[in-house]
Image (tube, rainbow, N blue to C red; front, top):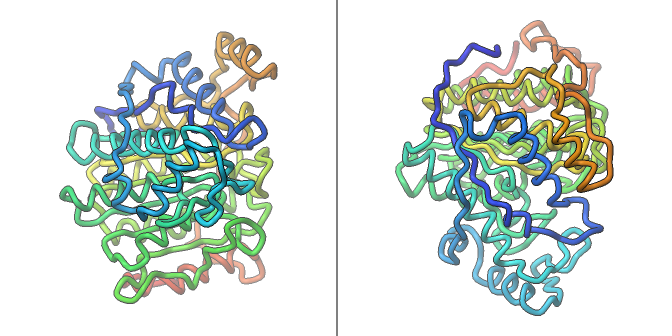
Length: 397
């Protein structure tokens, strides 16, 4: 698969160091150091500057944010960011979403970074573009939720639709259901949202089941695969390949948008899936391949969750950025000594020594049949049964 797709770019990552101002405080799991460590690792490995241009992130305007979010939420975020006082009626000041000074500006900067990535691809300036600080997929039109103040992904998709795209596919591989993006486009048949996540029976936000297929007139536009806890590379990749490629091919989007929360890793402290960095990298390669197959290569990739700040996030997202650049990294690479020293200096921790977890991602193809006694297979079958006929596809292997 590594060399299957010729990819000359151009490719872009939108970043400047002040994006780490999106910071809920020292006790919060979504520490911005994960972004610093990722960009430093990508730099030391030559990912940035080789095939991947780094462009600065503009600040989103209130009007741009208002294409998705209610005025009352925007005003509350601005107010909370000035006063430091909770605005619980819109989800600000909770344990998940503590208030911090400058909150609106920091969140608007993340939105601006994603909008620039969407603009790069939508305008044809770049073939692929990424914003690893984006992917804030839980934010609702009128409410902050799950570490997400504004929904940069939904704002970007809405920009694409307003600027020539007729259909957009969104694939979310975060361990948590991409509920905000799904809700915002629930009634819009132009947007296909696919989320693979740990089952909402056991994990925040408690949503995202096979029967959730979209609103009236948009049936089949929402797709959910609710995975059992303990799912590892083989099961996750089996589920992904049983659902995602067929639906995205049939839908035929103008642009593929992906959210890459890497909290599906076995070492992540907030969830219960068991993927390796190698399994996650395999998914990134498959999505890159799919973008070329169905969308002329037009691909916008964002970050998302991921709370193993040293051991997982920098390696996973550096692999993602390398794939966005068109030149995947060899998983057997050692991490650079300069990066290990940076990790020691910044967080006083021992950095991983290699870019791999030593796994070889492999899975059993769904077409070989499924086991109704296996929880994973029952969930995949339920999703295929609920959604595939709505796209004119046969749900059975």
